[in-house]
Image (tube, rainbow, N blue to C red):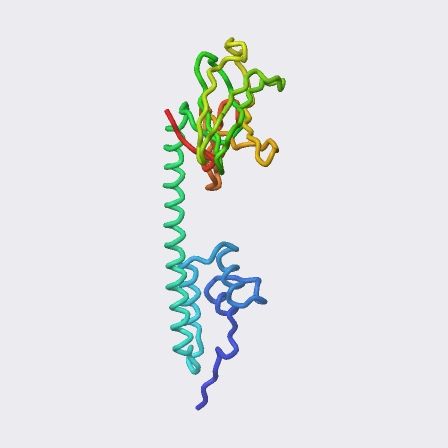
Length: 241
């Protein structure tokens, strides 16, 4: 009496064919077959388990799968399940982050923020504008120059002696003759002589948040400021009323 091995040489494609799972990819081994078995989609834990069970059902009874290989496949299944759970958790966190951004955005509209810029929109000349300059060293003198949209200087403010750090200045919205300036866009620049050469200083000015743009890809929140355009939230120094 002889026993004929009818399963010897059984390939993974034959196994998938017996389980009604078809494949047209063999050059990449089990990974390609798994991709074909799931219709080109990401291999999920259900499809992985189906492949594992099919493999066990169609293994050679005279030469069963090695225990170490079986344990390795179980470990792969466990890892796959963990990754699937992790992806679901990350997606949930991303959704919560988007909701948090939306709430944050709604609370910023209409508020005043301080950003580094040389441009300012004057809508009410009767209201004073308070800005600041960032000094990396003490200065014995300096000036703040306000110019209109045509580049014509309308007012010059003397900074005088200032210590290191953030130093504020105030423009009352009037020109050098004491008259309120027209409504419009203005440029404010500050400079101080260093080693006999005029050096520009970083100027921080207030601006009103008109609207907020939410990133669709998880990027940074963008504030659309009056007279300035879009500015990243990370560039904002202070958020006021």
